Image (tube, rainbow, N blue to C red; front, side, top):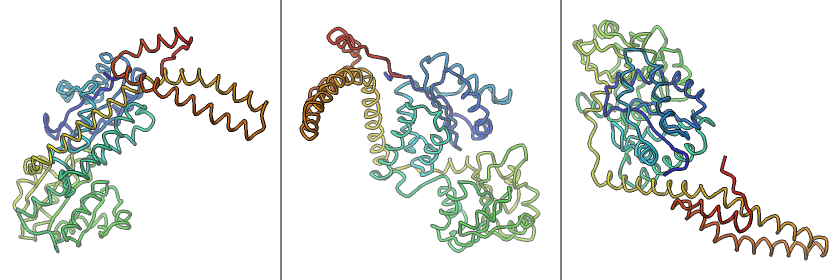
Length: 418
């Protein structure tokens, strides 16, 4: 068991519809702020993506902290949506470690092996900053290390597969090759960069971008796209071969692309246009799916068409996850020995430093330096085996006997790690 319990709670696309995940995504900041005010939490990281909403936290009191976290998330939701918290999955201790490593590696994603998740896990840790706490920081770094190993040594995600690439592949299967086609991209967030790169890899270079928040010019300055002015959206929709949306604007403002706007913009264009909505909150009015000449493809449909990965790659990835979990637990359990080892080394060091100081008074500088090197080398050699033994006993749960022996034999008091 871990010295400081780490727990994960949350829900993903496996259990609820994306609309419900979008509701959680909208209250993520409010819930996070409330969690930061809870003194029972020693650390927290919130991972909110289009596939999942999860809170990882560490605390000395498992049950009370778990109840508090769930209550905080529930309180942030509108009353009509609060029952979603009752469906949250709970991963205590080692199960949380296993789950995060699987998530970061893309094994739990809508598109198995997706490329974006490792970046989202990294951003979640960076967003938490010092509030993540040392234990969760080490856990997230372990997850990122495992994910990188899987990406580089297995076939899982080797092609940079993502929700965006699956959606674009679906467009190509249903309609036309995207090379040489015109595309209008709505939204300039981090996912817009992913979509732009994916389109370029497919040979699509006639790209335009519209930003509901007025950032099109800024995005176009660093990406191979043409900005669409605020008044030019309708004309751009009418002229494009493919419309891709990923702005994820506030749901209160309504869909960025309304059914009426689509109908009027495409009225003079007889050809059918695919509309790829990659926003969790839905940038396109669902009524657009009923319009003639519009093929609306949303995240639910992309998930339904996500291809199964090769079994061998998945098995290899799961093996690396298992190794990553074992390594993390081995290191974490050994860390429990740190206070005992530190106290023992400090006890010995006071005698060594006293002798070094005496040698510096009795001998010339060169001789005193040689004596100091010898004494420190001998002390390090003598302490090496006891230090290793302390880590072994920590992993087997017998460290208390070791600490008691230090106090009985040498009068060394072992202070609990802060």
